[in-house]
Amino acid sequence: MTQLHLGLNLSTKRTRKREFLDEMRRVVPWSRLIALIEPHYPKGKTGRPPFPVATMLQVHFMQQWFGLSDPAMEEALYDVPLYREFAGLDGAMTRLPDETTILRFRHLLETHGIAAKILAVVNEILSEKGLMLKAGSAVDATLIAAPSSTKNGSGSRDPEMQSTQKGRNWYFGMKAHVGVDADSGLVHTVVGTAANVHDINAALSLLHGEETDVYADAGYRGIEKRQQKGSARWHVAMRPSKRRQLNLKNRVDAIYDKIERLKAGIRAKVEHPFRILKRQFGYLKTRYRGLAKNTAQITTLLALGNLWMMRKALHKA
Image (cartoon, rainbow, N blue to C red; front, side, top):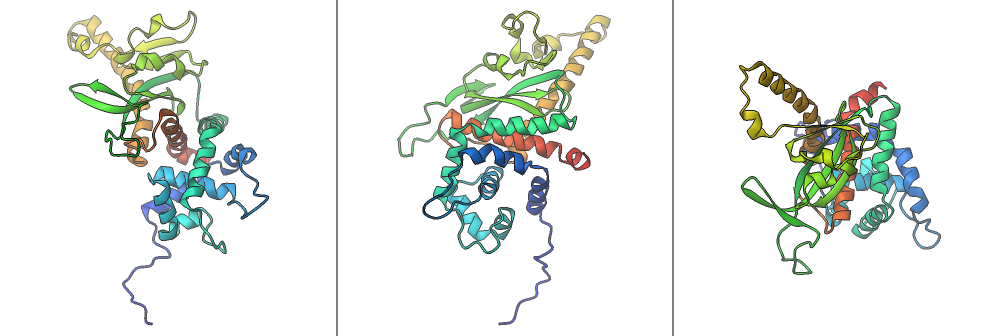
């Protein structure tokens, strides 16, 4: 059979997806993450040997990056040679992980709290390379929508998700609260709550304890009354309604406005991880039922997002 020559060189074309996977292959500390999982991974003394931890971890990360369900990830491994190549499944291996194997691996990570450990290892590496400081933190939260439909096996919405109002709109789902390094914008702490939990109630749990200054928006006003004496100084934004009343022709008001601009510049860094979470990784809606599973996924993605933000610096280090 003759081949059609369409002017396409499929062996050398550098697609955006391939570039992304190549970048992540270089910056993810695979050996240290594998060491976290190996003590809990089945040894496979009977029956078919289990897939290598490295293979399953690479499959798991692709599933998170591209927003694939367990069945969709199994099908993608059959359909997309690039995915098999990334997971080391393009050689002599005659079988591919099925959706049950992918599901069990994810449950293993959830059971042993591996997501939080992944974030800790990533940040330890970034700190060792001088890319993450601990002098200050910025805190914020973002809403993550959850399916509101009751057309499912239980006939009900996720009981751990709640509704909240923002502006004039109502949202059903959860909140991802994060604490980030005020200098680099790297995430160091993640807390997941129902959407109706006020930001201030999760604020103190977002601190690592070594910061001297914390920056937050106006939604955190009053946090100073909840913290212990001698702890970090909070720099909370002025309420927008009050700031609009400032007379910039007045010298004192002009100074207050300049201070607010400086604080806003630092707080803006907390938006960078949210952009990567929602735009780079396309995480706009919860995939699982329950806060623990979804928080684990968000934590994993934000840990990998730290590596993505620092990828150029890591290449130079």
